Length: 296
Length: 331
Image (cartoon, rainbow over all chains, first blue to last red; front, side, top):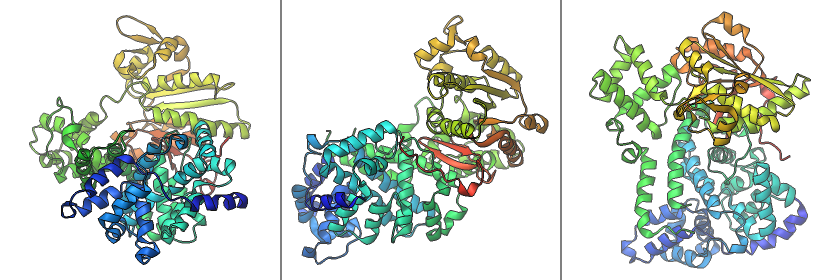
């Protein structure tokens, strides 16, 4: 990252308080939370929170804040339970604007962003189960939050980011390549700054910062590799950023594959084609689920 | 922006539940006209799926078991099997199991032959495979010529699709390049149909109107015939993929398409054919199979490459250890 850009970016990111969430989920959750407490199904609340990366991020942030004794909560369920119904509702009212993104900031279809995040969460959990990864729920959480920086860029450098999206779409290349050229930083770096400021756990932070560059991750190599591969699979199977990325990927030759093998030796004997087709099959349902939530 | 009303939450939960339990939404996915299928939770379907995968390399994920079940239902009716378990016996224990497996595979792959059947494969060809091959050829000082092979071309839809696709690229990617397509099949009747090049709406259902105007002419009724100009770039030959002598003659291929052909072969034959394909391909060339076909434990020399919506097998250009295809840099 260009140090000048970093310097300029830091205060703007640290000033971010409200982050837009999907209004469909906000409305459904709000309706549910307004019921008498004894009628609220906590499992359902956790499930709905887990559909949306922004609400999840806000809940984790607050649950891990000094006000709550820095509990080091690392799961969505843990965060919701620590906060209680009232505070989850307060988060929805206070930090998740009911408008999706102000019109002047809608650099690209925000639904596409939420779709990709939820898709990546579901694929990460699916892949984690298939290869016997030790913490499938952590995989889900990391998948959900891995691209938090995209939302950050959309909010802190709106016009430049809009141009990046447009250029990436036209060149059919990965978004980060254009971000690097035009902004001097990528969504990985801006996402990391926010995640640090919001005191996310080290492994989620590593995923946000290094999911496109696994080798550079200082820790959580298995998790970062898992999310890297899931992100690629999503983008290869129609759950990317809404445009065709001209890429041909030899997954088994990707350094992330070898890294993940170290944590999941079962991967060495795995039938990659079969896994791909299993994920392809699951993708039909994932797309179905994602579309049911984020209606186009 | 559409809002998801509170009442919509129930279907979402049901769908999520379905996702988690891996049970497929049967009722909404199977057309009413198809034979009734049994309970998809019947483990016999998974066993049938595995028998098919082990013998043919065609794989159906759990989420698409309903497709397999509907195909099985047709065959169960034909052989008089009352349950999936009973039908599994027809595929594994009975004397005519090979014939029955072939009939089931015919059901599974039925209706797959039409032009522009796999657009993601063509997009991969356009965006990644051909640019890579052209670049290699230019770097090596090779002649500006491409050779593609449609192995098991049946009635010609695939080679003519490739011919149209490449012809369209003459003005762009392939400016200054020439190409030809070898199309082979074992069945003489299929080859006769292919050479005649006359197709109806079923085969042309995904062929855009400008392409119909450019590469076909009307020939009575609703049928269209391939133009002589397009025919001239496709060479049809009768080739038995099992015949070592013929196969060894075919070399210098840049891309081979062999969709839903190897599924009928046993493992040993499949290995031999894939070996021949490997020898026939130029270094850096690609092999495309049917969408659900796998080469797992058949051949380890090809690299499995994922493209958006498609999968291909690449013959390494030089040393496999250095061949890591990463995302392209922006131009």
